[in-house]
Length: 165
Image (tube, rainbow, N blue to C red; front, side):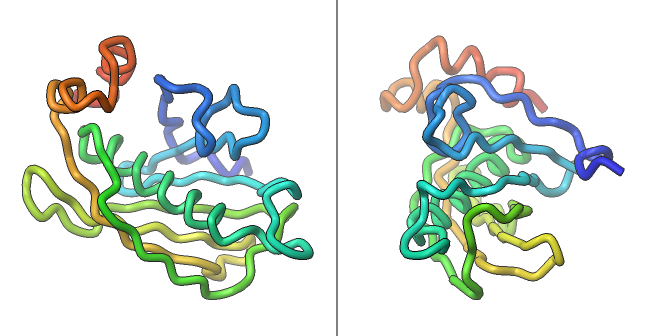
């Protein structure tokens, strides 16, 4: 059975050069996202060039993976433009390059219309958690994101289908 068979592919628009999710960035992670309606998921294998020592994935890359899954979870599940305010990461077990990972993001709490807390988890193929995170995200209306210079008009237009209820 295909691991993504019971999930809906989340369409990605905007910056295709993003280090985390940009499909046009050959040096990046090229994460794709899938949803079951309650959480977002991604399956990836971290390439060797993103290691710290030996075959260990660099902690900054692990943090990026978790930030990316939580960010896209907020965008897709809450239908908002977001900015990361803060994240904490717990490194539980070593993460090795060349090994497939399953990453999950979910909404933990919507504090109010402008802020939410999300969780991210990195699992190995046996379902064991290797890293987890919790992040606080600013939730922005599209016009605020444009006014602050976070997204230009074209990018916002690309995101419109994701922001509709």
